[in-house]
Amino acid sequence: MAPRCALVPDPHGPGGRLQPLDDTGAPLGPPEQARDLAAAVAAREASDHPRWVWAATDSAYAPLLPLLPGRLARCHDLRLVEALLLAHEGRFGAPRSLGAAWARLRALPVPPDLPEPGLAEADGGQDTLFAPDRLQLPPGADPLTAVVAVHAEQQRRLGAITDPGARHRLRLLVAAESAGALAAAEMAHDGLPWRTDVHDALLTDLLGPRPTVPGAQPKLLADLAVELQLALGVKPFNPDSHTQVLRAFGEAGLQLGSTRAWELKEIDHPAAKLLIRYKELSRIHVAHGWAWQDAWARGGRFRPEYVVGGVVSGRWATRGGGALQIPRVLRRAVVADPGWLLVVADAAQLEPRVLAALSQDAGLARTAAGGDLYEALAASAFQGDREKAKLGLLGAMYGQTSGDIGPLLNTLHRRYPAAMGYVEAAARTGEDGGVVTSRLGRVCPPATSDFLDLTEAETAGESGGAGGAGGRTARARGRFTRNFVIQASAADWALALLAALRRRLEELPVQPADRPHLVFFQHDEVVVHTPANLADEVVAAVTEAADEARRLVFGDTPVRFPLTTAVVESYADAK
Image (tube, rainbow, N blue to C red; front, side, top):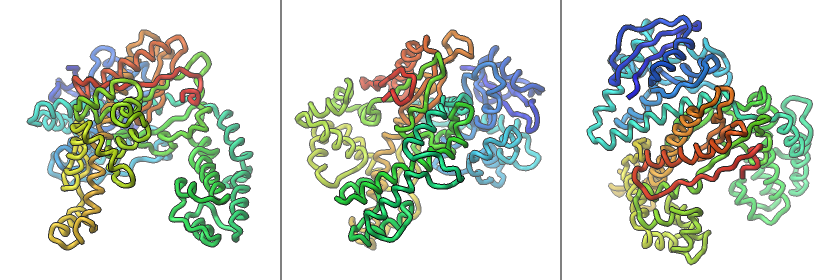
């Protein structure tokens, strides 16, 4: 195993302290003071390739990135690991900062976690990021002492897991989650290539010229609002107000339960189509319009601020900027630099394949072995009807039982009993108030006290039986746990893919300035920015990384996780 080295930056200035550690977290000699932390880190990375140990990657690694000649290979992020261990130990949601972990170790009052920093704070520079109160340590506590002690305790807790398989998988998750934090910091530093001139032209085509008055509505949106009012024949109203829209449609004799697109599409009236169009354009204007461009797409790069593990399933979130949902119509603005290309790779039908691997259902594994899983499923079980095959399998994974899905589920139960039994068992665990885990051991949130009160009342005959509030609540939790085991395991695979791909890109024998690098990640899709002459090598690295992730997460499974890969100049051309 690689050596370890704890790292604590000085709160004000370029220096910091290092502490070599063994695998258990015990110090190997005295701490070392570095006047130039970046130079000291680069030298030790080149000589020892340690696993860096720090309180949080976004505060320790991100400020070093502009100063380092290359990237650090591996780390142990105490904040992320603490969250994983707390959930594993049944303390889901407990504070996870360095200060909180240190307080638990010393039997001190545990400080609550601070909110995730927003854009303004993240842009505040080194002093803001390194401020001691972000660590939540009590006055007088030494940050390096706390990092070393908390890391050693985390290593002890990992080693104390009695099941060897569970211990091995959770260690993999700890490494993958920390590697994800490195990748997230690097993607924010490098940025996704973004042509603001193309973006501006797309917005102008969609919305009209940019308003000259800040906060004013673009012309096409204002025109649509007037058209909508005239189509309904009512007095002026605000199309962005849910309440006012429902009232306006009601005054025109059109009763709406909501303003969701699927409901509007069922209404045979010109106003419904106008409202759908207005909502689409308004969403682009608010989420990725000119104000977004000013805030996020500076210097020819969109720099997403990812929150690793920001969703309970292990999926990432962002601190703003909409990095996980760039509208398809605006992807034309994502253009590689001259002489470079984008390699865009996304996993095909990932969650159904994850179910096949998790459940070890031989029949579903065979079905998932080829290209289009739904086509293969349709051929084997649904007389070639792909839509029925897709509807049935998605219904099984998400717990849908209404409508015409019953016969489809019955077919799946007969053909794939192990797979259906797997999700049904997860659902029953959730309905009973239990917790389920991902393949690598990420734990779902426990049942709330309200859930337990309602279901206990139902058991005592006080809530109307299975159709009462307790029954509805239990079934909702069952749907959540049913999907959690699949979605969280898919997130495990995606993290492993990201870590394996990042390592392979770093191993390419090129100068740092010419090195392909990850620039975008969302759930089951990665984008690499690469010199054009290395595109084929990047495609091969992506394929190899996907297979490595499959082996690491699911072991010896016949299920394959094919990636659809495109080499393009513009992100829009990848689909």
